[in-house]
Each structure stands twice: as C-alpha cells, then as structure tokens.
Image (cartoon, rainbow, N blue to C red; front, side, top):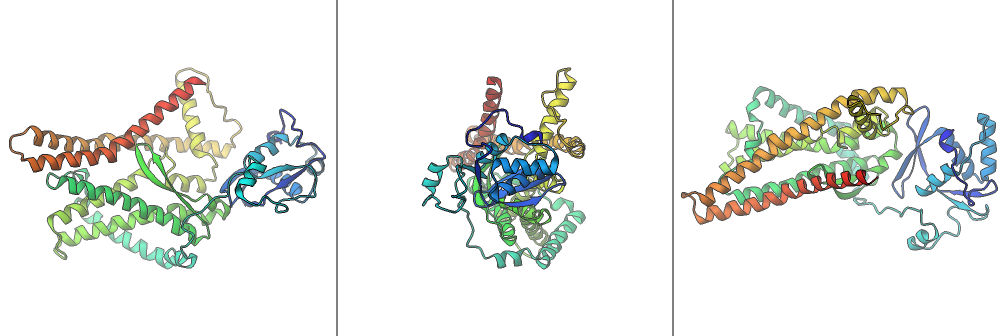
Length: 434
C-alpha cells in the first residue's frame, strides 16, 4: 500500500499507541475502494479497502503495531501508517490516544468548544437545515406514482413544443420597452423563486432518502446561486443518490412545463392573460430554459455533472478531466505534461478522455450563453436607456423607468460577472506565485 508509506515519523503514532476512531459509515464504490464518512460533520473520503480494514482493527482496540501485524498476515507486507493516520486525523476520522482506557464517546468534552480545543483537527458538528420537513411527505412527493405524474406533465409540454416550436421564448422575451423597472424587478424576484424551488427539490428528495441537508450561497461562473449541501447522500447506496441529485432539474422542468401550458392556452384562447401577464409568462419560460441550459456546462459541478460522476463511479472526474486537458494543451505546445495521471485506473482514464469532449462543449455553451444571450439582453436595455435619455420623444417618467431598470439589471448581472472575473485574476496570481 504505497499510499500508506510515511515520509516522517509522528511520536503520537508509535507502534504501542492506540488510536481513537470516530464512528463512520461506508459504501463500496469500486472493487478497490470504499467511501467512508462522518454524517455528523459531513466529511466523506475515498480509501482503499485495505486502509478501511486497518481502521476497523484500530477501532476494535488494536494498537498501531498490532494493526500492522494483522495487515502483514493478510497481505505479506508491513505498512507504515503515519501518513495515513495523519491524513485521517486532519479529516476528523481519528485521533491519537496514549492508552486504551479512554475510547470515543467516553469522558468526552462537555461542549463543542472544548472538543475543538481538545483536538484542533476535529471538524465541528454540522447544523443541518430543513430537518422539520416530514420524511414521509418527502417520500410521497418523490414516490414512483408522483414521478410518473411529473413525467406525464413534462411529456405533455414537450409534445406542445414539438408541434409548435415557436411557443418557446427566445432571449427577446426578456426585453420590454414598457414598465421596464417593474418587469426587471419581477424577473429578479422570479430568479430567487426559481433558485428556491430548485434547491427545495434537492432538499425534499434528499429527505425522502433520510439524508439531512444544509443551504448556502455560492457562485457558478458569473452566476450567483443558492446551493444545497447534500454530502450526506454519500452515506447511502449509489443507486439511491440519483434522485436527490436530479430533483432540482425535475422541479425546473415542471415549472417550465407550466409556463408552456399557460402560453399555449393563452394562444388558443382557453385562458385570457393580460398583455403584461403574457409577457411575464414567456419571460418566466425563458428563465427556466436558461436554468436548464446551465446544467449542460459540463466543466462546472452542475447537477448533471454529479449525476454522471456518480453513475460512472469517478471520484474526481472534474479535476482529472481538467488536468487531462492541461496535459493535452502542453503537449500541443511541445511542453512537458505537468500532471502525471498514470496512477488513475485505465477505466477512469478512458472515461476522462471521452468526458473531455463534453467538457469542451460545456465551455462553448457557457460562452455562447454569455455573448449571444446575456450580453444581447444587456445591450438591448442599454440601447433603450440611451435612446430615452438622449432622444427627443421620451418623457421624464420613461427616462426614470429606464434608469431604475438599468440599476436592477446591473445588480443582477454585473456583480456576478465581476466576482467571476475577480476569481480568475486571483487564481492566476496564486498560480504565478507558486
């Protein structure tokens, strides 16, 4: 086990020392590796099966020397466990003990502050959100019958689009020249609604599997997004993870389908929407479709990426693919490849080479979206604002309406783009400094 060979010694991990192993869950991810995790801290790592066997021996009260001897009996070699134990300590899975008289759960610190003070490497216990939502209701909302009904609703909307493609809104649905500020404000609020229900879908589906979640704020490229931390799904079997991963997209598809039905019924005069109401429906439809397009950015950790990496059993598909592309770029330039990927299993290397194509497609889609969808919308509003401010046919209310709309658009778009560009600058500086 080359991953266990230590480069240095640690006086706390001598042959006679005992190791306190925190309770962990495990899932078999491949023939060679197990995924282990602490549900209380949301920490999950991949380890060789032999390493987990050593953890089990230590957890049963064996000293490090005894665990080494048991390993030698099984595999014919004596591992040096210092690096392994230091890594596991940093991840919060073990801590050194001077004897076997005090094990995990005995004479524990009385509060979290004491726990951290006793062992600085110990991760803090995670406070989960959304725990009030009944698991039984979550299971009902994502039962096979419910999923079949969702599929019928989405399929019906898809049939409408196939027979009447013009019903799908384009980017011009996001540009209006009347009530611009009100329209922009509603679209911004609707963006929060989209995000809320997308993340709610993840959370409810995770609850249906008995997994707790956390909510937070993050960024995907130039888009500020809400995030649902579902790290706990790694504690359940692989085939049970797919629904929580894809649940947000299911909610987006259902929402887009509702907008398609409303637009279709308005066009067929089954319902009568106001002119402004119909404009909003088409704009909402566009927002949902743009949200779904975002999932195809294969170089970003989107829901589809997590689905593929889980399905393909690749623990670091994104990072390995990025390193593969960097190697290919350097090869074209005649430079040495900076990343040695020889240790990656042959099966995963084959997957990485194939995924690289989609990785490139995702980048093309992202920049197509920026330059041919987002920027044209911004340019259209800038043109309207310029015309109203300097044209002779506009009144003061129209100018004020345009200025307010421009401020709202700037807040919703420019801030995200600035944060994305700033992250690229910081990343370049950090690389250059190394």
